[in-house]
Length: 546
Image (cartoon, rainbow, N blue to C red; front, side):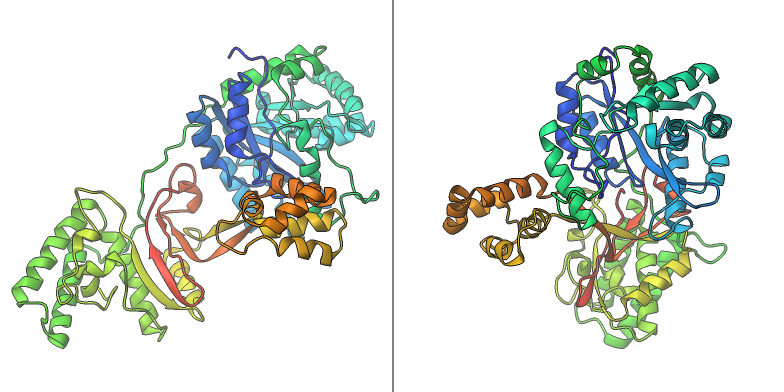
């Protein structure tokens, strides 16, 4: 690694509280500066991991995966934030389990916290940075309590050994320099390595105001409120290796250790490989044989009840066997049986289910299994539009559930397959054109009427952006060109537009894994994306890489 510094502590837009770094510009900037690697350590999540991993590899930059975790105090009376970096697959497995547990078991007043006891079990393959002046050790050092600092250091050394680093930051914030001197002294005394970071929140110094606006949007504060907390500095940008070398010219080992850590972090993710959940079949039967048995029996029931309006019975039986051969060859028997199972359960509970639509309606096997209620032979529907061995793609059933009872179907799936194996899919809301103008107008202290007048000039259309609105709407463009306050508002809003703003739960998207979801979050997961619309719910059952 030729560069003398690697950023190991960085929040992207997926740190929904305080990050404004977009992934693609990040890796482009790192490559432009000759950085051999860069880390993303979003606050308590891995939302941007796959996007970052792919973008970094494409740009020739080594991706380092990590996260900032809130670690609860011994008595859970507070918490400190430390940075965890994955060295390998085991480290990533440990990190996913810690993050999952923090949300499922450790939440305190809405904040996901990691219980310190969990670190006894989940520490392999992880490198930990101390959090600088705001970590538990740093807090004790700044307060002048050397005994407490040593005690806290011992806790981390016992669990992480030479994988624990005292983190040094020079960001111009109160207490930073005092912490650096005290931390270096402690490092020498206890033979602990130090590492320099810049706690990055934005790409360039010019983005500081946009970052502060984002923080104010999250906190519901006014940008120019003198009483609001000032927790960040304009130095928290993606500083170049040369700038970091200048800041830490007296501590070259803190820079060298960033390279050493980058060399130690070698997580390789397998993406794009699909893994299907297991469907329980009767003892002594294979899943392939069970699918054939159920499909043949189902077709016989359909023929007995409705006849063969699409041809002779032999035509139906020949079509069924052809489809079964293709389904089994492509490895999807379990998928068909799983979808059939929860649809049949829904019907047994008098939950309205649609007849099926989309390419899945072309499958006679689906018709036989009660997944759809459309006879594909009667309507000359082609199975090859749904599944084709010469054009490998995932099956995709479109099913409609009643919106008032869809939660019952989800609950059944979770109970049947195990709640530790099933989860709903997260969705991200973004700062769209109109909304971001209203948000920025509020944090700038403008009145509602003033901001509303500007926002309403932005067309309410899918895919509308501020740039498009300025090009299309003469009144908005005139205001922008003639009114300095409007221009400042729209320019600031434009710097935040499109960023992830919040995370929500998809109305019906469900992930099912063969075992605990955390086992598959390391690389791939089996996904049945059950995407329900708000009326009669549309279900898109599609296994794909996660």
